[in-house]
Structure formats: structure tokens, C-alpha cells
Amino acid sequence: MQNQSALLAMNPSERRRSPRLLHTVPLVVRGELAGHKVFWEDTFTANISAHGALLVLMARVGVGQRLVVMNPQNWQEENVHVRRLGTFDGSRTQVGVEFVEAVPAFWPVSAMAEESVGP
Image (cartoon, rainbow, N blue to C red):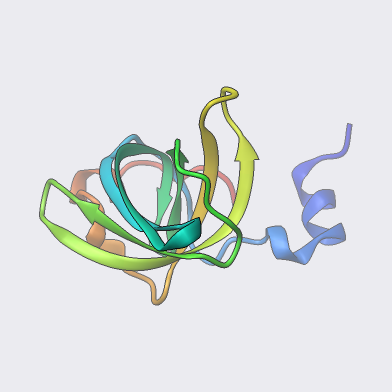
């Protein structure tokens, strides 16, 4: 099995601009589905970083789609773009999102002080 450094060398798009933290943060996500139908969904993160997060969503979204995430702990809202989609449990999807600009203050301060995961 290849190590992570070898995978990063083969695929530079896997490089991270900021450390990821394994941290669950409740979020509210809103966006637009096909047919211009607006959705709101209570969800959570699997990991976070200053540049984005990995979320779990029931809503069917697409790569490149714009969403708005709201942190109910501080009521802050930020625009994000969907960058990756992955499987989760058959009914929900892992959704990698990226902030328009890095926003480390969006996440709870205590979470950002924890040890990071990955490069």
C-alpha cells in the first residue's frame, strides 16, 4: 500500500492549504436544488479546516455548486463551493466544501486549538 506522501506526489490536488481537524460541528446548510427549489438542512462536519470542511448531506448537490453554511453556535454564515462528493451511508453524501476565502474564525476556537490531522 502506498503511503500518503507518495499519493500527494502523484496527485498534487490532494495537498491541503491548512490542517484538517477531526471535529464534529453542527451546521445549517442551504442551497438550491434542481428546479430552483431552495433547501435547508441541519447537518454536521466530519472534519474542518480554515479553508473548508467535510459535511454530510441528504440533499443532492453537485461539484462546483454554491452553498451557504451557517454555524448555529455563533450565527456566522459563509459562502462555500462544493469541491468533492463521496459516499457516506447510502442515503447521505460526504460533501467537501471550500470557503471563498479562508475563515478559521468560523469554527469554534477550541476546535482550532486541537491537534491537526493530515498534511
